[in-house]
Image (cartoon, rainbow, N blue to C red; front, side, top):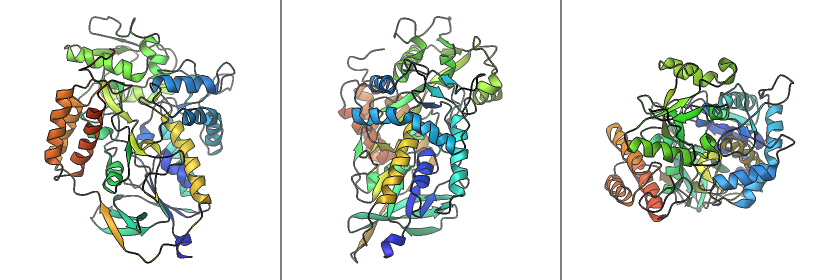
Length: 482
């Protein structure tokens, strides 16, 4: 049948998209991404590792409990337990794909600890280069798979709807040439929205383009108000800031102000390893008071070039040596817990359209993601979705009409810069009703000028509607913990 010959189209070359493509074998898959070689995804920049209860003293139940606590119990509890239970199998599967995780002197997997975790359960690959190692291994597997066709250098800016079902995409290459690609199903694995903020740990391509396109087509969103800010990006000029991994605090680094007062002392039982929303709010409040935050990692032991090569190289490139002096740090937009509403198998509310990874919201992260659960979610949900699509019964389209849904034009570059500043000021770790209202009005006035303004308007609407604090969404105009 004609429909059976159509490929599954996966949009995005990060961990979630690559895993989905691999798991869909032997069904034909076309992977489309903006970068020619698949680089530039947030996955590739991830310094944290993958959380899994591998220590005999640890358990999936404890991992699940930490995930629920970090997520302010706004999570889907069943999804959380599934994630924690399946985490050890994800590590084994990645090893089978060629990922070499770091090991201790005894040859056992080295387990680190990060914020919000009650136990050491983070496995890393290449020290703080875990994301890059995973992407490199999975991309090699994808490009060697006969059922997958890879195409880089294209942006997907349109969805084809036939009889109310997503039936393909429209791509646009760097020269402006357009191509229609019909599909048995379309999977968005386009990442998050961090690049919409003035200061982010995300790459420039994490601008919410996939989310914006799906919203234009009528797919339902979920929890758009929950944006996680990583508390320790290197505080240097620029838009996309180097990340200072949380694993440093797990290894003994401490946060302090300009007078050497410890910032997290007495504020949370986990101190410097408190959940990211707690730490980010503390640093943001300090900045509002005119202070500056510093991370002292001089007491961290071991070989930095082996344990933290990414952080060391980034710091040295900006004139700092973390082995000798404290680092200036600042909160930066890092991860979007919200996104397109999906079920456990990645189905959105729009037939034929699926989402996986950061662009999706299946409830596993709740109101605030636990550290090192994002790569884990991408792997597990990608495998689950790929298997679902491979096993799906195919049914032919009728001869009914079709229509294109377009994301629309982009804002001019100067307006994008202004929008980033607006969101950072109004929708950061501390939020106030007047600022959210005024920002929403600005975006509403710009809605016809570019899709970024419409997406920002949707984000701000969700933030305004949730009038009380929960997880990463802190309404500072009402009762809110520091």
